[in-house]
Image (cartoon, rainbow, N blue to C red):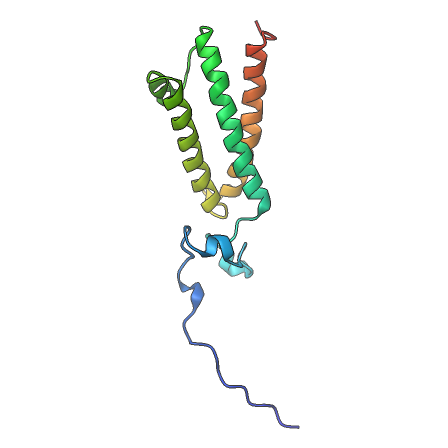
Length: 155
């Protein structure tokens, strides 16, 4: 039996030769959420899709950041001190610039971590995804501490 003839449809250009652009249409409608080949995982860090858990963590962290901003404003109004020099600078302009700056800086940082979720940092010891998923837990601990201060559980 003869093998059927199939014309060559590939262009000869390897799509994997260059990384995916982090901000592109593929970010919303792409199909790659991870590198399938093991050899590609250490070379191609950027993927098309980030997934629902990452989106959930992103938005929860933004909400926690806003809650942190309001607790901070309340605590500073009651005599506490903002220890973060950058946020203390914005707090001098009033509550609204402080909340907006906190939101924007958090959103930019989370976006950077999300884009670099497969990138190995700190000499390969940790991935961007691990840092990205750690942030909501850190904010949870911070919010619990601030609630304890606001509601006078901690003297």
